[in-house]
Length: 193
Image (cartoon, rainbow, N blue to C red; front, side, top):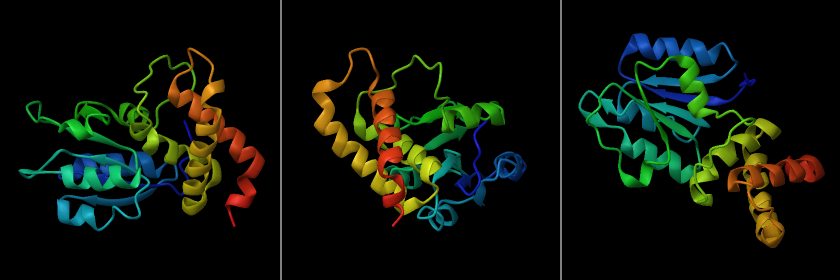
């Protein structure tokens, strides 16, 4: 498992027992827990600080989609965690994982922080949908929010310049992560200033 020391994880869940279990699980890995928030209003107070989020879709009859929209706008990875099978996720948010509450904490972790090795699934060639994962990867590499945003920007700039040299058969996600690691090694310290 990854070291989540200092990563701010927002938990939006109105079942306090489940929220407590998730908070303990991620807190034991060193994450800073925001919330748990049981309402959209409470969750909205934490979106600016969140670097990853677990979102219950149905909060006492209200949908969490405004929070998901804000997290997506900021490039923050999130996973939907719901007990309702009949809720339709809007098309604009379908890139996020959607787990049932019967899933254990390990499944939530894997959905929020997908394993880097051995993954043969190319979730999307849409760079926009990959931004939350890129931003989190940058945060885990550098440990600084502002520097990680600059790292993502430089990664995308370099990717535009190297698009003609991209190897066939490599997923967009793996290609961008490779570029990010190179940029971090060569200019990582300068990004911190």
